[in-house]
Each structure stands twice: as structure tokens, then as C-alpha cells.
Length: 222
Ligand SMILES: C[S@@+](CC[C@H](N)C(=O)[O-])C[C@H]1O[C@@H](n2cnc3c(N)ncnc32)[C@H](O)[C@@H]1O
Image (cartoon, rainbow, N blue to C red; front, top):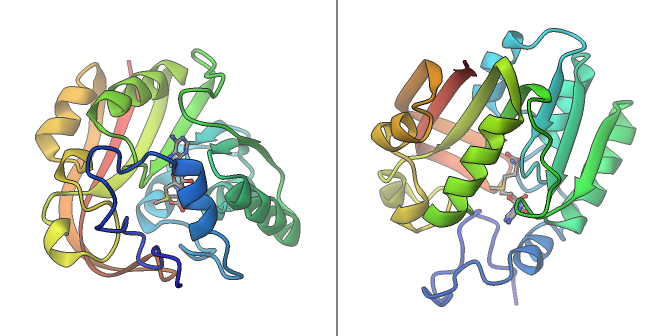
């Protein structure tokens, strides 16, 4: 049987009561192919905003998957920590870093288990972390903000509910998707530098591919 996840979508027949019941197993299976599910190039929103962080800045990549974003940031001279729940994904991320001659401090960790430091990072990159249901998202967003130094910036990308019509990536669960209002409220304690609800043709491996309803946020900790 084919793994369910080339599209980055969760299987629709998964129990709605516990759609993310075994995230490590689900993502290990998704990352078990030879290729890189979301490619090896960085996310475009991240690439467009990474200039906020200067060489030597310390950045955390949340749920970094197979490493495309962390490795690219490390190649730009940043000091990068990255974690993900999938050991298969992190092993591939380590291979990508080795192949590119980049140094990233990778960890296999669940976002609730990661030892979040306080006020440690100049930047946090949170690219397509919509595995989180509302309760987990609240904890995760809070930890992300607290891990930033004052003046540190968050770069976040996700899908909006319109993505349920495109079905070109992301979870098919409206409660996991972001709106401008949701992000404004969640990051109300930060200065929002940019918040954009937009559509674009995405080409990130086979996992995120095609017309997509996106949202991007850049926010600075006060
Ligand atoms: C859509 S992928 C995005 C990966 C990466 N950020 C990127 O843009 O290529 C979502 C990632 O979240 C990870 N993940 C899912 N649940 C998690 C959890 N509870 N804690 C940490 N990582 C998790 C998955 O293993 C997967 O790598």
C-alpha cells in the first residue's frame, strides 16, 4: 500500500477524534521515501525574511522535518537549533547538513518535550507547523514567544482555511489552520511587522505542491 502522505495531507479516513494520535509514526512513514518530501530548498516566506537575522544570530527551527530550512539558515552563517518529532526526518536532515557542509544542532523532540530555553533566540522559524490542534498550538506559540530574546523575531508560515478547497498540502482540519485574526490575537504581545494572507503557486517537493492559500507572519518580541 502507498504511504498516505505524498501530498502532506493527513489521510481522510483517520479518526477525527484523534487524527494526530501517532505523529512520530505518521511522519516517520511520510519521510521514509528516498526523496525529500518538501524538497531541499528553503520555504520561500522564510527565504524572503531571513535577512532579519544577521550572521552569528541564534535561530530555532520548530518542527524542522527533513532540514531544508535549518540547513539553509546555517549556510547563511546563523547558529541554528532545530527539532522535530520524527527521528527519520531528523536523520535525513543530518544527512542534508553533512552533504551541504552545514552545522545544525538537531534534536529529536516533541514540541511539548523540547527543553525550550527562555529569551535565548534572535529568531524562531515556524514553517508549516499546523500539526497542532488549538490547545497544543496555544502552548507552542507561547513557548516560541518566550524563547525569543526581546527584539528577536518570529517568521511563521501556514495555510488559511481556504486551503481546504485547494488541498495541495496541510491538514484537512479547519481548527489547525490560521486566519489573520487568529495570529493577531495569538501574537498580540509582539509587534507585528508583517502579516499577509495570500495565494501562491507552491513547489515544495511533492508534499506542498500547487495553488495554495497561505498566511505569513513576521513579529518581533517587545
Ligand atoms: C508539514 S511538516 C513541516 C516540516 C518543516 N517545518 C518544513 O517546512 O519542511 C510538519 C512537521 O511537524 C513535525 N511534527 C508533527 N508533530 C510534531 C510534534 N508534536 N512535535 C514536534 N514536531 C512535530 C513533523 O514530523 C513534520 O516534520
